[in-house]
Amino acid sequence: MMQTVKLYHQDSYQTKFQAIVEDKYDDQGRHALILNQTCFYPLSGGQLSDKGTIEGIPVIAVEEREERIVHYLEREIAAGIGELVSGEIDWHQRLDHMQQHTGQHILSGVLMEFWQRETQSFHMGDDICTLDILAMPFDEPEMKEIERQANQIIYENRVIRHYFSKNKLELRTDRFKEKQEKLEKLRIIDIENFDCSACGGTHCRQTGEVGIIKILGWENRKEKIRISFLCGYRALGDYQEKHRILKNISQFFTTGIEQVEEKIRQLSMEEKGLTKSYQKMERKINEWESEDLKKNNRRAEKGIFLIEKIFPEQKVQNLNQITMLLTREEKTVTILGSEEPEPAICLACSADLSYNLKEILNQLLSEFTGKGGGSDFLVLAKLEKKEDIKKACQRAAELFN
Ligand SMILES: [Zn+2]
Image (cartoon, rainbow, N blue to C red; front, side, top):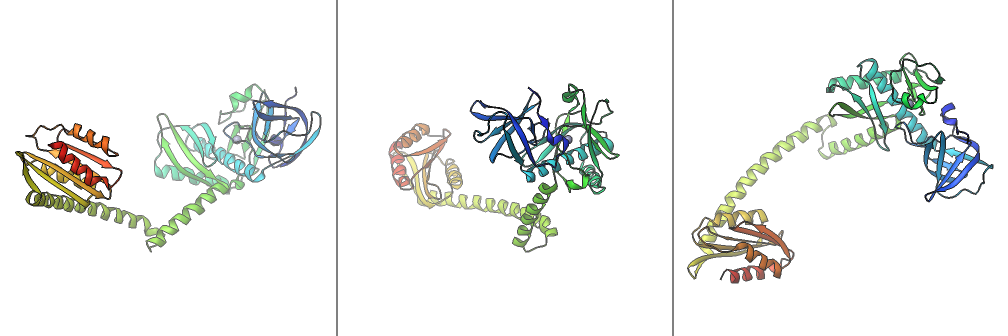
């Protein structure tokens, strides 16, 4: 069979086309369609495939198999082999892909021309684009300069030509050369007096159409750097969204956008200080609480001391800390419970007693729903129902007998 005529290579701005059905078949439940020619770009070379319709049927995926373009349709097409059909690609999405892809050529060109860093691979995602370069790490001012240089190429509005060449040109990017070598002819994307590389994707006619290139970040990986970026309308959308967020934050703090960063830094510092003094106070209160328990809630029973209390409200962390303080007492068993904010029970015995706390805990957990754990001297369980706390504390006291 003949290879599919790739209309997108001739004119990436063509959105509508007519073609003859060459083959259609069921490909593992997918409705595959092959035409003599197509505007639909397949998933390849880091670029996403086009979306659109053929005879009004949505095209879900487009793939390339041995020089033939396979369209996967949402449902089977009525037209038979040899019949004429018409198709239309989603222009909005195509333009987006052209902007991202052309932007990548510009960025790769800048990295090669001004920084001698070669692009290894490019990936266009639904949200962001990334390219990998072999490199020594860049710092922030360098990245800012790279971004500026790339945008300068855009604003110079250079003409981008594409042609097939049999000459092995001195290409700056080798990415698609290998793959295309078997075609004998290389498809060259030539940005006026700037960058020349072999590529099979769809591109803009002039660099100005890319609009803007925004570098979002870069990761210094083992032997390469992965740069993430956005171009054109994607970059505009990103700016609009980030500006909206920043504006809302500045309104929330009733401060200018320029002061937001400093304001958050201040608040974060304050918060750290407050947390520290709050924890200090809590510890102090826990100490008082344990003293109070020793004085008012301790009773002697069969040669040991028992301290019991149920708090209507006490944080689990504090319950644990108060119990811990009480394990220092001689011959003392402590049973503390708390109903809010989380129903919990904490049991402890001093080091001079030899109860098997874990066994007691397991017994409680077999009678009341909850989870727990601990050491030989202190165990803690969070129960599901606060109504169980009183009963569990009573039961624990029985088990210590
Ligand atoms: Zn390209």
